[in-house]
Length: 493
Image 1 (cartoon, helix red, strand yellow):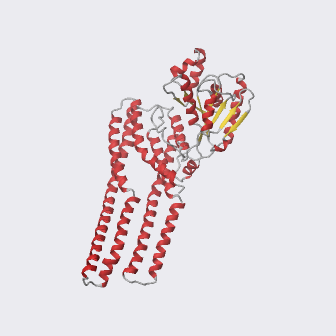
Image 2: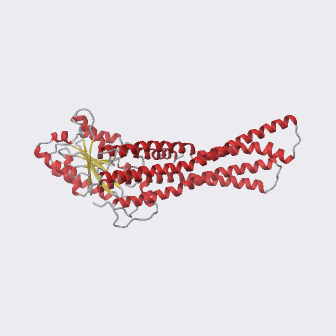
Image 3: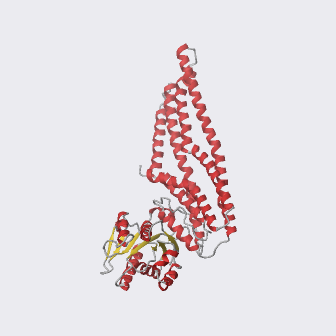
């Protein structure tokens, strides 16, 4: 099978075809041929590579697995029970070929929960539906003969709106449902793959290809983030300037023809900049590049784990599942090559991920704190000055002190109007740069990473190390997932 992307800095697109079917079949060879025909048709219709997802129960499941492997599909197994319990569903003679088949699975996941065996099979079927793009079912159309049967899984797939291919095991008739909801392309992954960047050599390893992808989307996010904030700050500055021009003309009695034209130019400029931000989707593009960069950075950080740990499976990956899936598959296949040394990997992760991030948060806090202090000082000075000028104006109106006209105009008319506007502008700049939250977040992240660093440093087994790393990666990616959620729901407004 080939997973090579179009260029070395692009990620391949993967689709998942899940399966459910009856154990007892009257015509197994005929059903097997029909399953293979359906899989070939899916391969012809969709770009990228298909991954098969199923259990390994007797009957239709095994026919599907053999057909998928014969066609070069990668196979991931979702077992309803742990192997020691799942084995009890087979005789010793039946179990040996199943065991050999499971050794060829790219991943084995046990989707069990407390309860009966029927409930475990139902849970396994639901997990297959939850993680599939298309569900292929060998189903006679009759109700389930027990909890967890094929009919129950098909009913759940229909309720979830999954595209379905249903094969009647008696007639071999194939019908499709909900195929208008099948996404053969992914706009987000296509956009990220199209981001320009340096490419890795043609013979580069999967890790080098992922690293090249990470580098280019990280560069794109770094370049677009300051640009976005500068555009918003420019909009604010233009509005403040327009207000200053209008206030000056009234306070000082300036009736120069250039003033209204200057104010008009500022207002039009502010509107144009705001439209550029809105219609070019600047924030959305920055957010998805930043999110992709951080997800890929996380994938690279855990690349050496021997079990290719699937992190963040419980995150809502709306719009990002193809990206995560591509990284998962590439990592999983690479992890089967050479197991890493435990201590080497642990020390590398501590230095290259944890210590690097701690240094990053320290630098960011060192930059954000002075800016926050300056903007707060600007707000305080403008607010106090506005109060002083307004109080002076009140006293002047009461005691009628003689003052030069220019001083009175500046102190009693221009200042009381413009100073509150400037104070509001300083507060807006704090908000635009998200400084309050960023400073607090940098401190919180440093504290949490210091704690998990100790846990990682004292881990002595792969299982313990994986748990600690999962905790660290969750800390590091939580924020970018929050950005993704906010952007996803605000982009249309």
